[in-house]
Structures are given as C-alpha cells and as structure tokens.
Amino acid sequence: MSSFFLLMLIASGFGLAKLVVLAKVLEPAAFGEFVTLLGAGALSGILLSFGTVEATVKTYPRLWTLGRAQEIRASARAAATTLALRFAVVGGLAAAAAAFGLLPYGAPVVLATAAIGLLSAVLSLLTSILRAADATDSVRNLMLARNGLAFALALAGAFAFSWQGALFGEAIGAAVAVAIGRRDARRRARPERAVVRTIAGAEPPVTASRGLRLYVAYLSSAAISMGDRAAVNAAAGAAAAGAYGIVVIVVQAGQILVNILIQRIGAILIKGAADDGSRPPPTRLLLAAAFGCAALASGGLLALHALGWPAAIWDRYDISRTTLVLAGLVAGLQIYSVLEYHLIARDAETSVLLASVAALAVAVLGVVGAAVLAAPLEGYVTAVLAARVVQIMMLALSLRARRDRAPAPDGGRDGDSAGA
Image 1 (cartoon, one colour):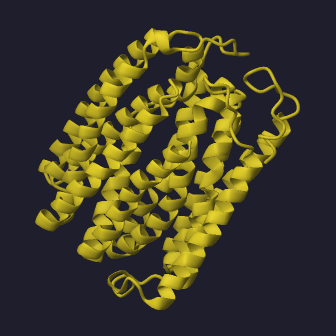
Image 2: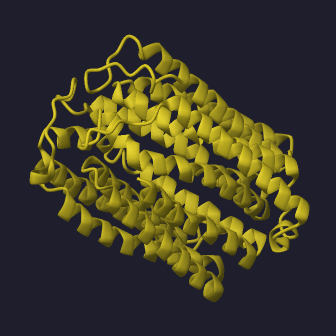
C-alpha cells in the first residue's frame, strides 16, 4: 500500500512539474493558451461521453464481483469505438470550422485538443477496468506512463514550438499511455481473476438513468475544474489565464492526493470490500487529511512567495498572497470526490447530481460577477471556492442522512466511514 501511494505521488509529481516548468518557459499569455486548451480537451472527454464512461464507475466493479468480466471487456470495446466515432465527427467539424477562420485557433491545434479529449476518455475507461479488477499496480503504471511521457514530450514541444508544441506533446504522451493501459487491461481483466461476491443491489449493476445522472454530475463538476481557465481567458485575457494556471497547479496538488485515494478505494466502496477483504478508510480521516494538506500547501506557498522563490514565477505572474491562501482552500475541498463515491455506492446518484449542479450554478454566478466587476484574480478563485464549499456541504449532508437508513454495499452498516 505504501509503495502504491509513493509511486502514485511520483507519477502525479510529473504532472505538477510539467506545469511549473512550462510556466517558467512560456510567456504568461502562451501558458494561458496551453492550460485553457488542455482543460478544454479534458472537458470534451466528459462532454462527448454522454454517460458512457461515467456509468462504468459503478457497473464494472459490480460486474467484476458477479464474475462477469467478459461483459466488462465487451462493454469497454463498444464504448471505445463509440467515443472514437463521436470525436472523429465533432473534431473533424471543428477542424473544418478552424480552417475557414471560424475559430480563434488553427485546425492542427483543434485536432490536438480533440485528441486529448478522446484519449482522456479512453484512459478513464481503462482505469475503470483496472480498478474493478483491483489491479492497483497497473493503475500506478498507467499514471506513471501518462504523466511521465506528458512531462517529457510537452516540455520538448514547448522548447521547440511554444505552447502549440506542448499541446501536441501532451496528445502524443496520452496516446502512448492508452496503448500501455490497453495491454494491461486485457491481461488483468480476465474472468478467472474475478472474486465472486454477493452484493446487495448489484443486479442490475447500473441503470441508464443512473448513468445519465452521473454524466451530468461529472460534467458539471468538470466544467468548474476544467472550464474555469477558459472562463478567465475569455473574461480577462490569456495573460490572466496564465496567472490562473499557476493557481490551478496548487489546486491540482490537492486533486492529486484525492485521485490517488480514489484509485485505491473507489472500487472498494462500490464493491463493499477489496478482493483481499480490506475496507476503505473512514471518511472523517480523509476529510481531516485533506484540510491538513490544504493548510500545509497554503503555508508552503506563502513561504515561497515571501522568499521570492522561484523568482521566474513570482516576477512573471501577478499573484497575491490572498490568492494563494484561497487556492490552498480549494485544494483541500477536492475531497468532494471521495464523498461522491460513498453516495454512488449507496445508489444516491441523484444527490451527487444535485450537489454538482448547485456548485456549477454558484461558480457561474461568481465568475460572471467577477467579470462584470473587473475583479482581480482573487475574484475568480473565490467563485470556485464558494462552489466547492456548497458542493461538499450538500454531499456531506446527503451522506449523513443516508448512513443510518441504508446498508453499505456488502450488506453491513458503514456509520464510521460515512461519518462526514
């Protein structure tokens, strides 16, 4: 377990290091364009999924415990084909529009962004398969490949061709990672590896309506965490988006820790227990750890800002200490994803949906208000912070309301782990 977290931190560190180095290498406006299109590509991966990938969060772990691994493989192949067709059509139309000057970017950049979206969706699909099979070592290897390759190729592209080269390097790295993940998924998700276990409510694994609710919920959350850069770019310009991209690095540090936890405990929550019988850690402990890390992140950033190191960042980007504190708080609130998994395991997708939509509404109102008032960067970060506060409060209240009246997926009670 400890080696898994350590190597996942190293893998995630590549992603953060990539953004830090690019922020130093590129001009603020160029860095702003890169983070804007990177976020747009990742968001399109969710947008064009239409619930195809989101449904696998619950379907694959439950199919696995029912010994139906062959259905997982067939479903994944069909989903990947569908995603490829959708992106081919939408990406092709967008590239044609760009070629005729209808978009602010050239056709090659649009195609690279679409490729990032498709590959992000396929990587999520492969991760769902590996999580269902409790193949945490393969998840770790996939993350190492994805972020390590993106680090090397995006930086090489940036040095050679500015932000456009970095975007193409990101796409190539994702393509190689998909090939690695596909190989591991075929090897690990075999019927004979499944540990069959009876789970209350596992038939059917997920309904179409539940998958649609998760799709809308994830799309709403992603619009906050991935569309915020585009919103700042549109409202305040590419240079401001570049400064906001520095803030995003802080937030992603918190998201990294949460993602590592989810890779390990997400499927365990859905299935009730891992194949070795281990249980997920209590939610109260996770919440305390998240806010502790947020406090450390804010304190560390304030110390670096006071010391003026690295000078290439602070001298180039106009970022206040207040912004860094707010960013640290947003980083801590990324723990909302774990609460979502607790609710999904209890078939409470509607609660996840309502919290995500409410958060998106708060974020949109906040960003529009910041733009109208010509607020500094703090205004946009505050909008995201308010959205996450609303989201985590709604999720925690929903989880508390369900912990006593609904059994955990394995038929037992889960009062401790749900004690948010």
